[in-house]
View 1 (cartoon, rainbow, N blue to C red):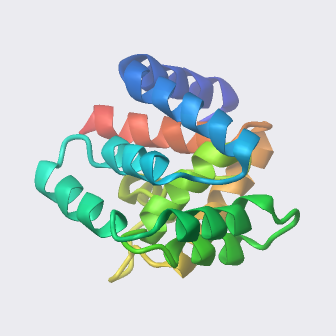
View 2 (view 1 turned 180 degrees about the vertical axis):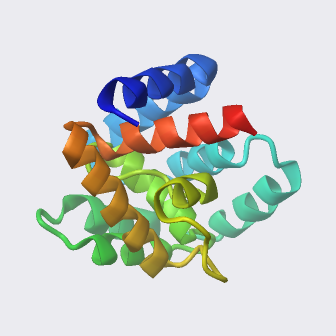
Length: 175
């Protein structure tokens, strides 16, 4: 895809997912302002990700509810505040929270810093890297996907999240 096509598909994503795009914008702005998450923020992100998967959403909400507010604040602040922190450090800090997988960590980082992060998604992996390995959803595989997303984003002078949204939307509209 060229830049115009990435922008077209990203806009289509935002139009078709207007409520969720607004939630993403609001949460991202709060994360950038406060440099931390609250337990309510974490629950909203779980709801955003698993909006169409009731049983999975309930299971993950139960797991993230086991985190105390101080731990959520401390670990999210580590991930969001350290200037120049390595991606692995940020992902691993967030994954220390109960119920937070590399997928949820990717969402938190994409909301916080959309220029440099995108959501860890199977369709995006396939579009950029081909067939997925067994046990795809690991921190290391997210970092691999992130490098590929950033390369494409840089080539077209776009945010990583814009590229990821476009690839996601195009794959899901074609299926």
